Image (cartoon, rainbow, N blue to C red; front, top):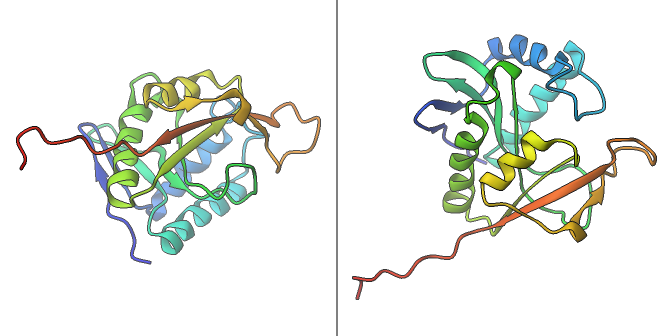
Length: 190
């Protein structure tokens, strides 16, 4: 499949991954603050394997988790993009929007800004009917981003993540959904 184009916002450049991204990506994935709502921080080898899976997803599907560059400030700040979850649940198959940014990039609205561009890409260019996002209930930062994006949580959709064992404190997840906006009628069109 052809690889998707890169996305630009006022402050962000969402681009394909480069070899030099792997070192700051490993640092981000080793940061306990960034990985607070994941089972554990990642080793360098685990981080590199995740980067390889992200790059492979682009090759297979034509879209993925773009590397985030903060224009004029940071050559690599994390990722924002779309992916197809590799597990089965009541809402799969689906396309998920996700983000992971270095902690020094939190609080500036970058996740929301980049995610809006990604949603537009998913709905307008990929013609997706729906995009989902999920996280653990305590991940309030990400949940606020989902809500700012207009995503809706229906508590009956919440689920136990099948990759995590029963009893794991991070197993329960909240699911947010966003349907493709309906086209608006054109007042002056005939």
